[in-house]
Image (cartoon, rainbow, N blue to C red; front, side, top):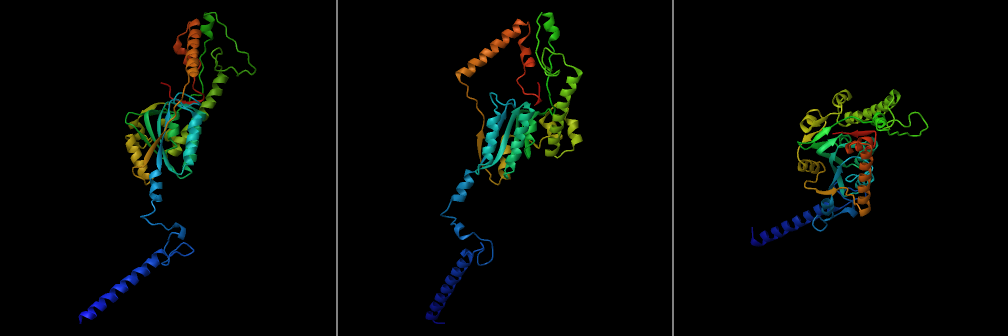
Length: 339
């Protein structure tokens, strides 16, 4: 074969390769009106075509995604130094509607609190998950009673190896009958009411059998709600939950053996697993933590209240430690671990 023929054959081969590549390119990138390309495979719509080199928006969006580390600390009540119900509910709802937020990792360090407040947070977290987002929980030093109740909204529960949790039970109220002592001190306290049970649980009113039955009914109903939630979310038989739910606390190891938690590990362990669950290893974690700002008036009023309370108790000849028992700050009924 002559040199000229070889050159011509090579040129023809190059032309054929170029034509083949061009045809293949048309087949790959040509979109039809139904969103499929010429080969019939799923394809981006014309307006969705992107160059992986020039358009980095998908990567930017991926990088903006974050896990919210939502702190639940202190007694679960309307408003406290480390806890605020309105702030917490608003934050959960905001995260639900934030497209960049992929999941919530709860950090719980709480002895529990009000039945109403704990259930509100639990329901808010269930609503959050309806948006297709994940909820994990990590337990700090104490995640008891209402703290554990809220943790049940999580699909996976982690605990530190030194965590105390459980305390599945209810306090419907408490009665401190001071009538005998006040009588000895010559102090007479009387409350004017309409309705024979209106003054029940007051320190100047002995508890009757009827009133005891009334409060027991409240406790039993809240207890049924609590154990039912544990049974449903931890995938346990109700009878098994009730055996555990006698109000005691459990160590992390005991809780894991009894099925109350999933893993014993570190905060980083929980973050790592959750990041993999949402298919974004190394996902950014953003802290959401309530911080109460106290002004001078708030601090002053707190001091005055403490001093006034101390003087009142002193005048009755009572120790200051009884203040919290006579007028507790915790809302009742409560899922609360009393130390």
